[in-house]
Image 1 (tube, rainbow, N blue to C red):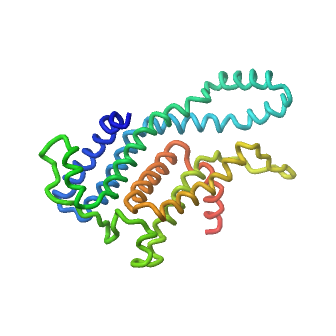
Image 2: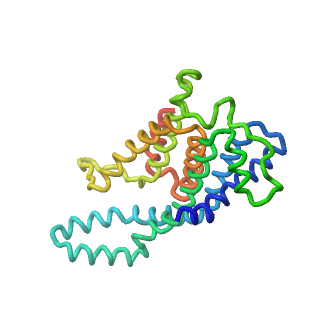
Image 3: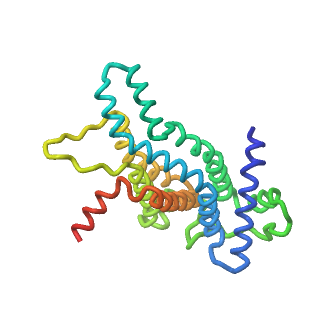
Length: 270
């Protein structure tokens, strides 16, 4: 299974990365490897965009139905059979398939994991092993590496983690995990539906799913930020590029979502 995964996904992605590097290096772009990671990640985001768009649109439809689902739960409390029947009827009336949003994500996951695997190998391998490893996998001798590529990106080694660089670089290196957490929070918050303001005297109601989503919106970015402190910077570069392009794609389909009230408050203060 591992060999099949490598043959179908990992090796083609490595070839794509090397081709991008070959082009950028040919035009003498400095830090060609770092920019190759950015271009490759952006390209993968664009390739997967149709699936991402389908997933986000399906999620948006489900979010729009949440008020109706809450109303059905209150109306048929204690009658699980009727609630299930009315829920399926509601889905049918609005043309919503509750599992449709999961399928595009499941298709995307192998590609995302393959991209992660490639970059993990590229930035983690010792420099003396990189040349033979990469050249053994490329399809054509035309773009084989002639020498070991520079693994620095604006003076920061892509194969080392912020935790390893703290002593030499100082606290400035903490900007990388901080930005990683912030970007992840923005994307997570945008997934929230934009809720209408509460009426006077109305209390905020949250079911378990909403409460869990609210908590994970804050906890998950913190976890990602902490993990990126120990991960090689090359992986953080990939993750941040992937997240930023995800934010742009989400904005095109769903707007600012749950960030809208925050942005409106900020605009009023200005």
